[in-house]
Length: 116
Image (cartoon, rainbow, N blue to C red; front, side, top):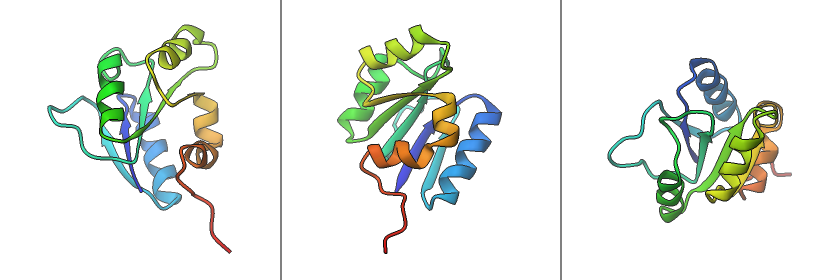
């Protein structure tokens, strides 16, 4: 599956790319919002980035059919609440994204589990 990651933190970008590729997904990494958004099944947004997320972006991604996942630190309650209020399908903590990415993608309806 195609996963769009809007992330301006280099450490997070590298970590997410490696994890997504390891789960068998195509990772599209963006550190700024392009004029035309690439098509993706899932979009992961850093809610802590002033330049990478907004209600308009969430709406545009949802209009394209992407499942939108917002993330922020577990103590950043206002950012997590803002992500929910602005319409993200899922809002998770950074640690959840790090340690349970497969579960997050499963909740998005994108199976990352091997089939028997």
